[in-house]
Length: 513
Image (cartoon, rainbow, N blue to C red):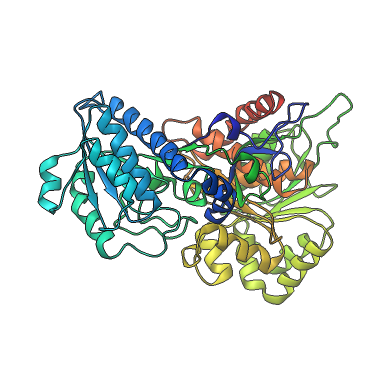
């Protein structure tokens, strides 16, 4: 979860109430690289310097106090025990000024520093407030903190944990493992700022407070960041001059029929799915499409009886279509995939059809690139295993999942939806923001969930053939999954798509809120 101050909650509003973001037709939280935030804050740092650090530190202290009040053992700040981990950079300065503020509120605050060269003014303020330094590993355990504040490394960190920083984290690891909550300053030490690899020794945070703007790590590595709170630094105007690196999507424009609409005007979907071995894939892909659109859905394949039994409104047989989904459960041959790709319609390529891309070689690659040159939208929807079959290495071999998805998109000239607990959507263009769809639930990790998603994707793309449609469709799928607090099968997930669509449409009409 990402919490933004009011001025950051959306990327802007027009007078008509629509959320305008770097990706038209979507709403959510803009994501910026550390370099972008640094450029934006540079004028303010030059003008305010220490005042800016103290403002950030106060925000850290506020979040720390809130966590202490919520703690089952303390329920208050006064008298609580806070351990502050301090590094050599400005992040350590933020932590030291926060330590001073917490001490002034009555907390017993102790500092463990990874360096003798900590922020001078921050250290002076902490000592004046009564903060004491711990010098031995045994002293940490004896102190038995109620809260750990991790200010060791900031957004300039690179590589694995090492040296004195690693030693400090090893010293406090036992406290964290025993359940002491952790508040990270900017990011958990050991996590890559761009959302890449996480050091195994990283202190997993229950909450992270960051400044200026949300960074890639906060949306790609939510499992170690916990709840992310972003506090503004007064650099909104400067950040608006930057093209965001990405957008954490939480809604968008869903195609809604109007007074003159008929069964064709919202875009016709054709589903090529299923086989005698996997008839359920056909039913589930069709279910996703039917629950996501009021327009016509066609079915082409071996499972017409099962599909019609479940959805009598579906039209069986090839015909006019605006988007074709191919692959779920039907062992797609390379020739069949090439036949679909050579049509002048949008195409969603899923499951077995992705395997056909992997084995199809240059002929498939050239057809995909020709589609891109012709302005036709192709959506590839791999999970990690399918990605590896196509590209020869898993997403984990790339700097981040976004980099992996971009590599695949540029290789084939296609939009890529890389499935996972955090789904990534990218276009082949180099400079378009990555679209990140976080999941609030893992109940969608069930057989057939991807088949449902393929149908939802095709329904939205048929009406609005653009990359943003892929992201809002993925968001609807995630929102549907979040409605379950217990295991669900894929058919239940499909049935939850329509209520999710209703919620997305209602939010958009309210202006994306």
